[in-house]
Structures are given as C-alpha cells and as structure tokens.
Length: 304
Image (cartoon, rainbow, N blue to C red; front, side, top):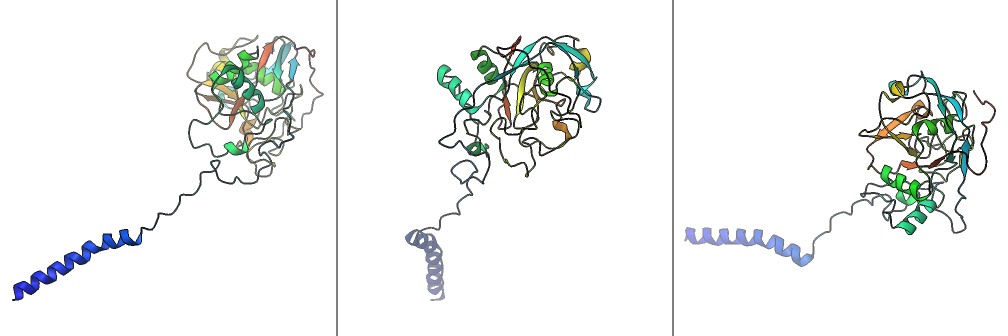
C-alpha cells in the first residue's frame, strides 16, 4: 500500500515538472530585451553641425593652389624622432587641391569608373550617417582608392614633402595659423569646435595655410604618396625627396576630427597599411608644375 502511494506521489511530481515548459508554450514566451541600436544604422543621430547636405546645397567647386618652386623648412626639433632633423628642402613647383576630396567628387568617380564605393568595411562605422554631406570630405578610402581617384583626375597623390610645404608655408610655423596651438582653430576632438564629425571642407577659416590650402590640421587625416620610414628625414635628398622605395606602411599627414593635443602640428607624421579604411582618413590630389591660376605666394608671416 505504501509502495503504491509512493509511486502515485512520484508520478505527480514528474507531471508537475513536465507541465512547466508546456504552460510556457501555451502562454507565450517573453521576448528578450532589444539590443540598443547601432549608431549610424537606423538610429537617430545626435545633433551635429556636420549633418548631411540639405536639399539646396551645391557641390563646392574644385580648385587647386599652385605652390612656387623653392626651399622650405621641413621637420622640427620640437617633434618626434621621425620628424627630425629639421632642415631646408627644395621642391619644384607643384599644385595641390585647395580642399580635401569631397563625397560629391568621389561619387562622380565611382559612377564613371565602377570603382568600389567609399563605405565602411564593417558595422563599426558609428558616424557614417553624419558624414554623407556633398561637401564633407570623403572617408573610408584606402591608399589604393585615393591613388586611383587621383589618377582618374589626371593627378597624383602629393609627396609628403609637398604636403608639408603646402600646409606650412616657408617660415617654419608649426600650425597653419602660427606657432601657438589652438584646439578651436580646426575640426578636431574638442567638443566646443561646433562639429562632432567631419565638417564641410573649408569651414575653419584659421585652418588655412599661408598659401591658401584648407584643412591641413583637422577634419580628416590624409594619405600621401610616400612609404613610411622612421629614418626618412635623415636619409632624404635635399631636393624633391620622395621617401623610401618600399615599405609596409603609407604615410598619412594632418589630423582628423577626433584629434587633440599638440601632435596635430603640421610636421606630425602618421602611418597605416595601404588597404586600411576608416572614418578619419581622406585625401587630396596634386600635380607637378604650376596650375592654370599661376603661382601662389605665401601670405605675410602670421607667427604667434
């Protein structure tokens, strides 16, 4: 008798436990909490002065600045090891884009050639929806992408020495506006500069070189032609240096919209593998010889 009661009690316990998932199915399951939206992918972006183009915005006209032949001071004693020695270098005349290549300009290249779009390689592109304006600098381009665009335009990437002369002028200043750092003079990492992503090119009137070339300090870092070499300045020719013949990294010059501190001085050098793409990297083009507009002369010294 006791054995029969024990079997019945055991059966009731089993039925009670097996009924739990059945009741869950009948009542429906509670869905898991939704993951927070990935910024830039369907979420509402934070307010930014650098949002997408309005319906009335027109692409900014392309323009080049001609840089005269002659010497300039390259490098600085105040910088890192790879920025030294500070010495005078002679460059032949060349012309360089006044502005960084924009989204509108790069889109025309893609449409004409079928080249891959400037787009992030993965979902980590948190700011992409705030960087699509026609006149914002194109980003997510590799060194090869930048080189292909410049060739399509009948141009080339500037050499590292050309880039520095165009942005620095000939008086040895460390920033386009002089020798004193100013975090609000360029589109960098300060929350007070008015932009939390890239700005339309030419937005910062102080971030303009003595020759009139814009955005050398901020907005986006820029690919240049040279392979990176830590000893490059020590081994370079005194006239038209072109950097090492080969290497692992390509040089990037200038700072981006996330840059802070004194390391965004014009003499600073960065490096990256050529196939890397990021929301902080863009480029501009150059050509050998003076452009159609003649040769630009640097503005009067603005050292501070």
